[in-house]
Amino acid sequence: RVFRTIASNPDLPGVQLTPNEVKGTSFTDDLNKRYKNEFFYSVVALDTSLNISEESIRVGATMPDVTPPLAPFIKDIKISATSVKLEWLPGTDEDLQSFQLYRSENKESGWQMIAADLGATSTSHLDENIETGKKYYYRLQSTDDAGNASEFSEIFAAKPWKVATAETPESFD
Image (cartoon, rainbow, N blue to C red; front, side, top):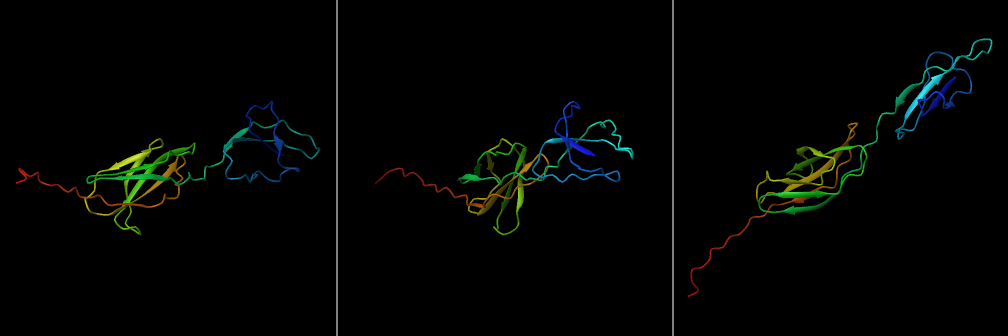
């Protein structure tokens, strides 16, 4: 018989998962992929005279994290002649690892990662590797500590502008 619990302490009871004895040497426990707990399993053996063995040592197992973080939300873009500053809302996922910022000159393709490891608490990035008058597209992605990547944020466009300069007249004659 197979038992499961969230406690490694053998004094705390486990829940019996198998109503009958298991034939063979393996058992599969189907759990919801969102479970993050560490689970502990133990077995007891039953002989042909129905004698029950002592509980085995509990063995721990953790479900793999397969849930990606939420897609980031870019809240503002500030454009100048020499830079584009992107600002986004803080991530809310407990296991958020980092943000990655992508840029392209074409909304449909050609995306290049321009910032690979923006920390989990970062909320902005200043892109100064730009050309004035050229249109750029940006999108953001987040990654958790299990390596799961979020969907991309909405795409934002920016076109750094030229600063016009005027000469100051020496006189108004």
